Length: 369
Ligand code: G6P
Image 1 (cartoon, rainbow, N blue to C red):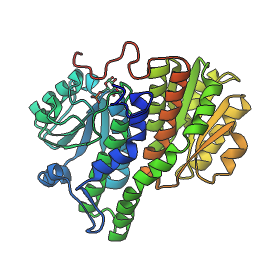
Image 2 (cartoon, rainbow, N blue to C red; image 1 turned 180 degrees about the vertical axis):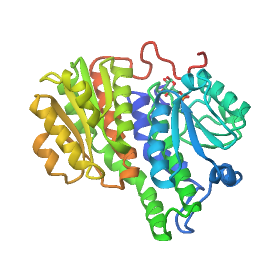
Image 3 (cartoon, protein in one colour; image 1 turned 90 degrees about the vertical axis):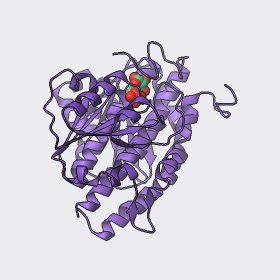
């Protein structure tokens, strides 16, 4: 096992550090920037299904569901197709409206999650085209779906999902870009800009990982907290949810993710000098609005840990800690902003003496409902 950990203390840390490589592997053979194309066999063979779809329904559980939420923002923004993201366990039992004009995308690292598998069977019965995004090759979900794309992240051993999440987002972004191109949603130049920036992502993730030493210092300050709030807006709202999930899964600290603006409808009541609030505040989208959310937290004495774009000045003035990630397009930013949050939960869990790779009560793959 020590050999498999490749010199890292835990599989989770190894897998966090594998992300630049994993994302590159996800691109392999697909992202062809020079030719100006994205090749995905499972999509190419069924392109009419995607182009004629009235909507996309994404079904998943856990972290994969969060990747689905990121994809919702990306698909609606770039492809202009309505997307619904459903917990597989709810979808399968609530008599959902599904038609032959729906495309259902099932996301699953293991490809064995019982609820997701059942949701796929239901969607197929109703005549929908079902596309799988799995990591484990030959898994049940990969076999049950009509077509799909593997994430190629390599084996993920840590129960808390890390590289599976970022590679799921990578595959779904490639899919969205491909469909947007087919639908004539953007010019050759814009498409090329996206492809080039995708190519840059592994190096940018590598740079985001350089925050590790700083994140460890921050973890030490907050390791004894009982609660933690994570806020983000737009593309980074699901990243806030995922950051909170990571923390609660492995450190057993109660954590909640919220859309930053929704804070005033509840969580703001919890904020005092004992509440750390992690805020994703990159310099794109609704930056100014996030800054005012940060001011609201500050005036209630909450402790602010902000994830900002390199070179940010404004948030630095307000936050207790800032963690920088490289600049990128807003729609691609979740691949970077999620990195320090993974590291934060990892270090806090280690400092609390938790079993990081095998947290209590959780399983890597949930094959019963
Ligand atoms: C379990 C795992 C999570 C995972 C979820 C969905 O809860 O502990 O890490 O996100 O199942 O699993 P899947 O394999 O379908 O992505």
